[in-house]
Amino acid sequence: MEIALTNTLTRRKERFEPADPSRVTMYVCGPTVYSYAHIGNARPPVVFDVLFRLLRLTYGEGAVIYARNYTDIDDKIIAAAAKSGEPIEAITRKFERIYEEDTGALGVLAPNLTPRATAHVGDMIALIEQLLAKGAAYKAETGVYFSVAADADYGKLSGRSQDELKAGARVEGEDDKRHPSDFALWKTAKPGEPSWEASFGAGRPGWHIECSAMIEKELGSPIDIHGGGIDLIFPHHENEIAQSESAHGHALARVWMHNGFLTMDREKMSKSIGNIITPRELLEQGWQGETIRWALLSAHYRAPLDWSDDLLRQAQASLDRLYGAVLRLKDVAAADVEAPQAFLEALADDLNTPAAIAELSALVTAANTAKKPADQAKAKGELLAAAQLLGVLNDDPERWFRATFGERAAEIDALVAERVAARAAKNYAESDRLRDELAARGVEVMDGPSGSTWRRKG
RNA sequence: GGCCUCGUGGCGGAGUGGUGACGCAGCGGACUGCAAAUCCGUGCACCCGAGUUCGAUUCUCGGCGAGGCCUCCA
Image: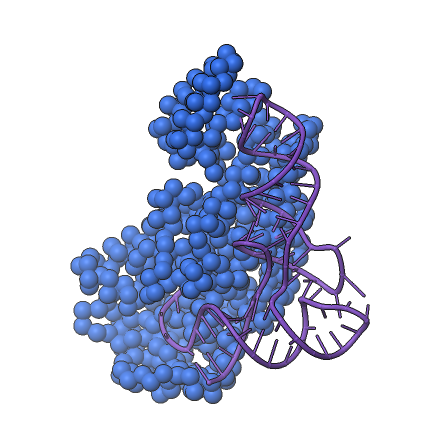
């Protein structure tokens, strides 16, 4: 199957052809681990998780190498440590663990590699030395800077010219850069801050250099796909390109992919604005991880997505329909089949998850209308295979509908049993009273020919 | 100020130069003791103006509106 991806570098949708189909490489910028990630931060891991699943299906599970880094040294982390009095490593390890829990709750598969910046400082130093030797970087009092003037095609990713950058640059007083667009590769050590020894002076790495060094070390460039949020195009990814390509003389990544923002009331979700909500909070509110994931995938990854409770409500309703179909076929063994072609083609078309979801909907209808056991098995198999690629329908269907009840499930079972008895005795006044009582507890009871089942009310 | 993206029904959201997916919500029907779930059917939309075209929601230009990047940022 042919996969097409929109490449930020060319601003076009292109056929994806890995350099080596037996070793497809993907790198996605991961979190700076100093606090809780918000739901907007969760969009890239979820989106690229779907791509990871699609690539593994296409090229084979062992053929795809996906790396997502942890930035575990940076100004914000140092500030957080200073504020709380905890050691830096305690903070970064704690939030790495939290990040893994949160993404795991959203059904995100673990990447093959999760390199830490602090484990690659030596690689960064070596890269900076190369850049200094080539004259692409220079040493100043406050650190080592990359010289934008030395890079003829600087700006090619974000589509900015050097002139535009000069015109748009803000006045910056506290450093000694030669050009306003030059950026720090290395920050000279300051008292009380962590630092590493280097031939060009003790200090700590700048942000951009870590991805360049880790990609080179862990995957080797050029990689096939480099992903991240749209806000990373400039300056982060632009600078990664500048560093890596100046040092190595070849492309850093062949395809650059960027996801759009999550908004709240149409405004970018961001910590500084304060309009954030975390996956953790949503889970505490009782939303299920797959519901959050579905909501994130309900829009195309490059489009903005306005986050709201209504969006979650609709996502849950959609998943309820899927789980309802699976529950209805719980006694049918799923056939061992692949996801239907139309579904795969939707995903292969630049990860068009809304179109894929539409195909999923057709599969649900097929599952609900199938009468013959063979048709049911096929429909169930196709539905599960397709859902697997989106990373949903991993839960047991009964648990899905009852997850929020926990210990109270037993007493609800008892009330439902009472109601079944009342109905058998044709005591409809009592059975309706019991239904009202169950409804008051948030339970929907459903009568069928072979008894009654229940689930949370939508 | 420079650069960029977007504007589809009540809501979410694909897509297309020519009968406008899909989901949620609504309505009608089947089913049900009544419901729910499910199935069948159904109403409702392409920001405005000009241009190109036999024909534009889809292409071009202008306008209006929303958002983003240019500084940390998913």
